[in-house]
Length: 406
Image 1 (cartoon, helix red, strand yellow):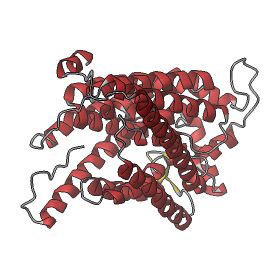
Image 2: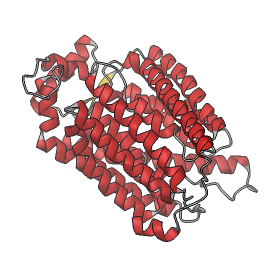
Image 3: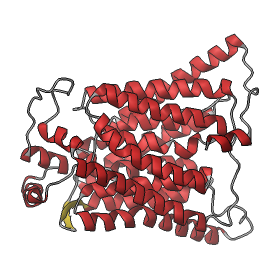
């Protein structure tokens, strides 16, 4: 995203910090206000998906403009319920992830892959670990379990609806009947689409007003010989990762591996190793910070919010980290951003995490695996490019091609 303080080098550091802080607060409001309003209206924790939609819409607008933002908001909201259904089997989940990442790779030809890459990143969570849909008659029971037993939200629901083997052919035997019913609940699926769309379209409408005076860099197009290895890399790695984690649903994390692959993968053979190393090391530092925070907090402390059990302590700390992460994103010390964004993402996904104490471990393992796979793929790409002597500057997409693609 464009630095709102760009072009303000002559102003005092305090003034620049104030602008960045204000911008961060507005972005957090775009994330949280729609989520809380929808949560109050529906009494469902899945309303927190509006925050994911807001981030998708904001990044799409900043990287591709309003038109790309609107299209991305519509597509993400349409794909969100499909991703939940696709998560019923490893094969369908992997195929949907492959289709999404193929599209991301195609958009690399027009320099728009970073505008839409958050769609498969966030929909990895809906595919692998959807936020539960709570029957209103279960709310009091869930609250009682959380208060007396010290369980996490997902564990409390598992106590109410214990797992049973599924006799349906093609469905994972480790899925509970409640989990299968959740993914097939039409009311839930419709609301998930609404949550994503409302969050995304509000960000698409508001963010251009905030960035109207900021310079907007033109998308950098890439040749076919650059985009093809990138597309193959992200499609194969994310599809295999999705299949593996859906086939092993008791493993923590999973979506973090998909996110690591898509964030670290770069287009072309001119790999920015310094940036990749900063991201990996920042993740490790973030994991250590997250481990300390979770140890101090002692897991999620649930309070009633809009009649729902809400992991207030985890979310409050996640919001604080998120605000400072946004501020540092626009500074010269982006390595701090990479450290802070790790606990931010983990803590704001508290509803989908079965064990709060395993957040750090899951994030660490997933990012290390994702980083290793991306580095290996990059080395293979470089080797193939050297052997073939391919020219990465030919067949570059033109602005007219990009307009036609949109």
